[in-house]
Image (cartoon, rainbow, N blue to C red; front, side, top):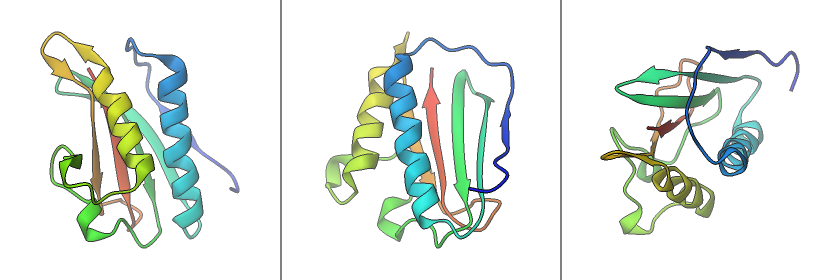
Length: 119
């Protein structure tokens, strides 16, 4: 990628560093594979969660991979990478909250938008 830009605020969350880095790396590799030229990685806080968001300018996720809330993998119609990342997210718990992922096609770049939420 040319001229990568990383915008991450000062955030703190307790997580398994290696699992989360592996998850983000997996999604970034997919974004790089399917994007045309641009990828945005951002992070922030929302509703008691720290989130990592990856957006690209590619064609987006197939419609059956997108959601408007939490991804439900009980249907079994998704890629293994997203499935494993969702399991890793769900392993991160704090009180009554569990981690989760969100996949949409509403990227500010016009392609896929993936978010990993950690409590």
